[in-house]
Amino acid sequence: MVWYDWVLWMGILYMFLGTDFTLNWLGGIAFGQRIDHNSPNFIKRIYYRVWAADDPNARADRTDGPPNILAPWVTSLCVTNALATCLIEILLLYGMLQQPLPLYVVPAAFAFLLRAEIEIIYGSQLIWGPARLRGGALANYLAIGLVPQVGIPCLVALRFSGMGITPLSLAIFIGLPVAILVWTWLVYRNNPVPALSDAKE
Image (tube, rainbow, N blue to C red; front, side, top):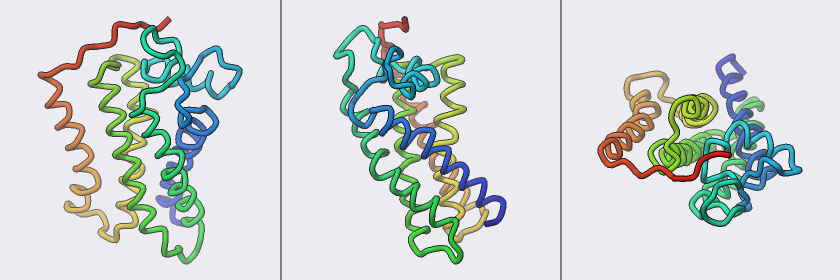
């Protein structure tokens, strides 16, 4: 593979090991479990520090609602990642190492765009929903979550689209995701969702 394919390959591996497999399967998120910072599962303790401490939807120490049950919309996204996204990532990680490239790499790359949309939905809920991430928590999420986990699938699809780097391809694979986020921001800029009243312990 050329150098930029290796960069994309490492990005896919980051998403597979950093979130989609480890968090959903080993951390129990796909099974509707919230993240408990006192859990004997060290993966849950790690994810509490790097993620769930700033997301009232995910942490087990929130003060309202069932203490250990995720909201159905969160669980549904996580089940999708645990099943569909992990399969797509495995196909890409294996297929990109083969020469010539298997025929399934191109459709897998386009199916990977689903993961970007999932992150946009989840990120929009974190930023403009009741969690209302701001400051350092928002910067942390942008750095490890929203930007790479939207950008990597879009760049992978761009790489295998056959369009090359053109104004049209950039508008489709980069401009559209940005436009969705900007449009969402414009909607909720003047229609803020009330923040959750519970605070981190």
